[in-house]
Image (cartoon, rainbow, N blue to C red):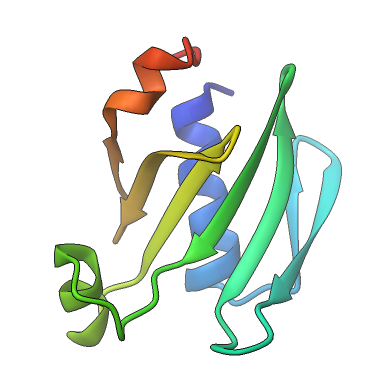
Length: 105
């Protein structure tokens, strides 16, 4: 499974299916909630990388938050404390940090 496929799978299981765990090729990762906003989060591994996914906070001013306010399901992904991508309604958008960190396709 590619990293892109993995991010979409995490989004699908955590936000669309509402699961409390994410299964990635037999490895199980817990889906948690942030304390203040109750946004879903998941920390998972891909190859030698540790990534974090967090549900988009609809109360912010970003374009992604505007989509979340309209009911779109958006999850942001970070690696090494840098946002590298998001998945919105199953569509992956890579950020410049993806290439800067030399993440695999």
